[in-house]
Image (cartoon, rainbow, N blue to C red):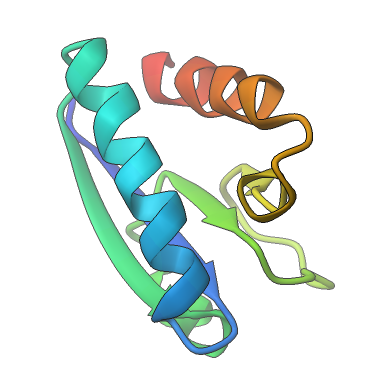
Length: 94
């Protein structure tokens, strides 16, 4: 399976994306999936549109991207975390 480039974005690219980044690292490690995680500000996502395979974000997205976008606010609220992890894993396995 090819290495996946995953953008992890929040408003500032620091706080909440760090929480999500760690969770994706754990998912990838647990399932032996090779990922390239890139933590960014939501405003920087456009500059990766030709190289990313997936965007996982806690920010509100109003744009369309050529890759799947997963809303990861559940990592902040604690509600629906397992469903979000399942979505991320499904995309990583593609």
